[in-house]
Image (cartoon, rainbow, N blue to C red; front, side, top):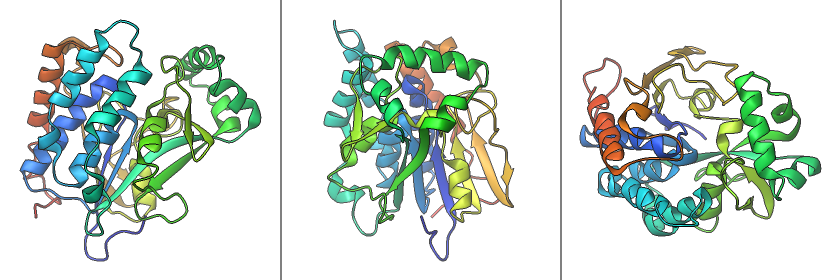
Length: 291
């Protein structure tokens, strides 16, 4: 994750399942405005739209991606795992473009399972129960289990150690989105267990600052405070270690428009995507630029 020697703009997008239609709308607006980052980083549901943004085609993917997910949701015996896997199979960007040498760096945040004890829970029938427990722990801001059993890992097109490439893109993308309480198919990367990025990283914004970027556009799918992970112990603020972080977020909880994490209406998704388009039109913001 080495910044471009002459430019230092990163775009980091947060998790949010169906709420991610907002982040996609923002990405499309930035693309229309001619804003191109040196690195695009994403977590969970924002991965595919951000990947399309990295190749300059977020608008091409458009709201139809989300509408297809809503259509799948109405089918019998279709869980979130199958919806996500279907999205990866049918809506991934052209790999020849995403992994081209002149494409901006692209990063996917994941949560690696680092203990055998946790692997036996997260990758088996015990996962759903553990997922519910972690939701309760998150509400109480108790991060002990995560500290003991997980660690954040960032897969990047420019990182030799955790290299994101055409061969592992699908499994890394799925792993980044796998919430234990509602996703029933285990996630593996190179035969190692992983779960949703949100347990360790809801939005890789601070990680971009630590990589050396001095300007970071952050897109959140929630109207309130954005935290580094779902346990809400550390806020992502507008400044960090001397870097400027510009946060774009919706004006309301997208539930008011008919879009929640694992449930969404067609009309709601269109409205949320459109709201993202509107919020993304900030090109005159001082300190940011258009190519």
